[in-house]
Length: 269
Image 1 (cartoon, rainbow, N blue to C red):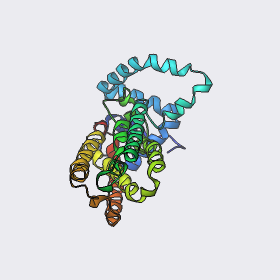
Image 2 (cartoon, rainbow, N blue to C red):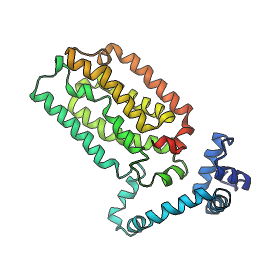
Image 3 (cartoon, rainbow, N blue to C red):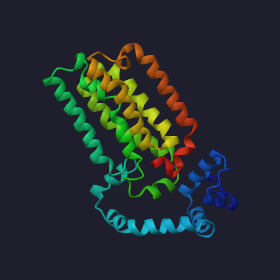
Image 4 (tube, one colour):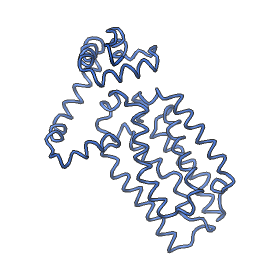
């Protein structure tokens, strides 16, 4: 589709959000739109004519973003790295990632100066769910001021979700490894499994809601009982790692099977 223009009917159906278009055709069309200004112009006309509410919404969003974009466009070359960084994360993620790193360091500090419950390090209790909150923020409709534009650009669905998830893991996991690399076998697989489960459930109820639900389940089933009984929870024992591996595999499978769900605005909630 990159060698020749797609038919106008395909562009019109895409502009109207026709759900009958096959996923591979949508992907091919979006990939073509990234490199073809002519077809982007046709898409703009199709939206103006066929979907006036969407055109009006885009105009409203652009009017609010124009001043910010003008500042970004005139920034010196030395700061253009931030534009590249924005491909991987939204600016609202930065303070949240800093908070997650702070929580991790605080748990490490408390583990050094105070006795852990039943000999279970505090980092071990928090590590599996810490990245989940960063993932929720990275795809939050309420926190990202440009979420309408983000959700409407080509390859903004699963492609962007995975990029932002990787950026969260890339920040949080090294800090956890630095503080508890000896215990990595006990928390790394649950951590990845929880992240995959968040994305899988997020395709149904929204990533933010999925993160809150899974974090609450972890607190109720693992965190609170451990603090009360002072015993190593079964979920963090090495014997439970095969179960975590199965959850990770199922989560990844669901994410792949429902990859089209992340192109919907509902996935931001």
